[in-house]
Each structure stands twice: as C-alpha cells, then as structure tokens.
Image 1 (cartoon, rainbow, N blue to C red):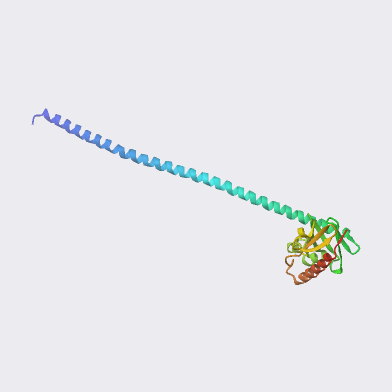
Image 2: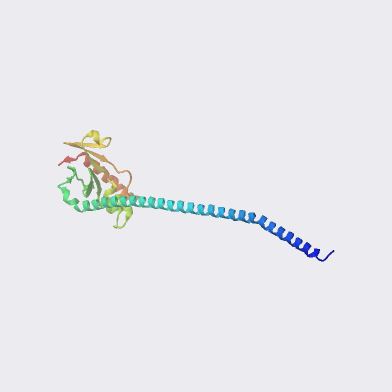
Length: 223
C-alpha cells in the first residue's frame, strides 16, 4: 500500500469515531433532560403539598384557638354568675336577722312573710329576680364545719337545700307548683331535688326543716 494513502485512511477512521462519539453524546442528552424535568415536577408537587399542609395546619390552629377562647368565655361567664349568687347569699345571711319581725321572716323584696317555728327559727333567704331561696344557718353548720369545705356549699342558700318560693301574677302563671294565693299575687313553692349532704344527721335535719318551711309557706301572709 502506498504510504500517502495510509494517513488518509487513519484520518477517515478518526473522523468516523468522532462522529460516533458525537452521536452517542447527542443521544444521551434527551435522557438527562427528561430526568431533570421529572425531578423538577416532583419538587414542585412536594412544595405544593407542604404549602397545603401549612395552610391547613394554620387554619386548624386558628379554629381550635377560637373554640378554646369561646369555651373559656363561657366558663368565665358561669363563674361570674356563680360568684354573684354566692355574694348575694352571703349578703342575705348577714342581713337576715333584720328581716325577722316577731315570729315571722319578712321577704320584703317579694311582699310576703313566713311564720317561724323552732325548727326554722334561723331561716335565711336571698332573692334573685322573683324567687327567694331558703336555707338555715344550722343546716349549713351541720354540713359545713369549716368555711373552706366546698362540699357543704350544697347546703348553702344558692343550692336550694330547703326549696324556693317564687312570686307569680296568678295561678295560671304559677303552673303545677305548690301554690299559696295572697291578695294580688300567687306564691309557688319548689322543693329541693336531693339531699344536700351524704351525712345522715344532716339529711335528717334537712328533711325536718324542709317540712317546717312547707308548713310556713302554707301559712304565708302578705306584708
């Protein structure tokens, strides 16, 4: 073979190899581009999912916080009402001796008086709207030997341990309660729903005084 043709053949081989390498490189580019696009799509989906979770979490926390605030407002309102009743009961207990005239307890706020017997000579009351709530100092002392005994609050004035008397305009308004008709209005008596203590001696005292209050109610007079 002539020497001048050999270099030419070598050059052709190199050109062919270069062409093949370029072809392989150009064929591999779409695969890399496709893989890159897949990762971008996955990244965007993940990012959107995280944003969605963040928005949902924020909304849920805001909603839960609102519920907690609403519940706390209701609790505060109940506590305020409870304190108002307790304050009224305490004020009534300190002033009740002034309402005793002779052998009667005068409920001047509602315009009637109750005759007192030995069983309820220490009868106490406080008025909320048109209703008078009754207890006695002896009943409270029986169940509440110390001022910080919460259990004894069930025998206190606001807990209706001896019942309550409500003033109505007429018998129809009073409904199915035990009634006492006076001049110009009607009284209705509501008994306690349960014992105010688990102590048997206190329960016995409560029943005795409740019966005495019912008898006093039946003999109520207008003032």
